[in-house]
Image 1 (cartoon, rainbow, N blue to C red):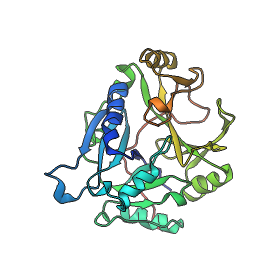
Image 2: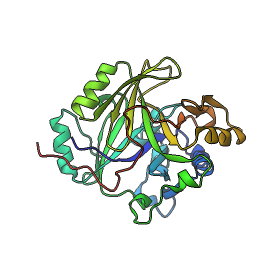
Image 3: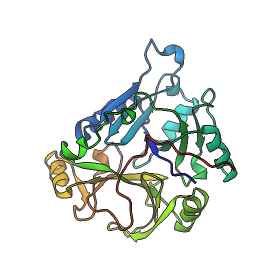
Image 4: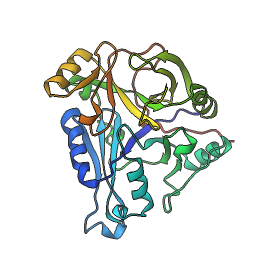
Amino acid sequence: MAAMPLAHISWAIADNADRPACDAFFIDLFGAETAYEMLVTPETAKYRFDREERLMVVGDTMLIPIAPAGPGAEPGNPLGDMLRRTAGPNRWIGLAFRVADLKAADRWFRAAGFELHYDRGMENHYFLITKRQAMGMRIEVMQGELPNDPRLKPDWQPRKWRDDHPLGIEGLLSIDLACGDLGEAQALFAERLGWRALGERDLPEGGRRGAAFDMGDAVLEALTPPREGDAGICGITFKVKDAQAAWRYLDTRGFELIGNAATRFAIEPRQAHGRLIWFCENLPTGWPEPHSAIRHPAQFPEV
């Protein structure tokens, strides 16, 4: 299949009162820039928004923490219940990919054996593949543009995160997925979805083994054995230009770090609003350099 550019990564926050602090964490520590914020206000009440969220970019990566709000804060609301159920340490909702023709993507995914879900009123914008079909990772396939997406503007300069910010982020290196069976991951990601297999490796921490797949402009690495609390996506890794410098910056900011700068390291998740966010300087053998193809939505062949 055609490589699918990564549009965004999302995760859930159970209580909307905690969302502003999570957003502030990424804005302050990562220099995240806000593309758009959806809020429930008296002016927007007529739209019946059931969540609040801020679309933030770090380099070419868009991150979206989502919390139930408005009708979503009420027990029994489908979206709110999903967010409350999904929220938890080291748990993420899923990935969104940008395609050129939603109907062509629909036909391709159905031919590959996936069941698709459309939210009412959004039939021309996106469809969803549930977590049970993708090893605990929800997949959103979207057509069009995200609100005020700066990555699509002609003057967009993601290099400033590498050159001007103390973390020196060069781009999103990979997304970790908890996996019970690497053979199952191979069958799903390489054979059904057609993502190029990049091989297997032993991870430097925790005795885990990973199988990596090239999604198009980011790498998905299935990790086994899963750890207690792991479900679907369990972490992301940013490539940095100087791991020692990034380590020193985080250390001077008072963060507890796990791992080591020679391989990869992360902020202790309790200090990162429950997310496991890794940093790595060295590119694993055979992996592509971080890049974004968000300006080139995937084209699907007729089936």
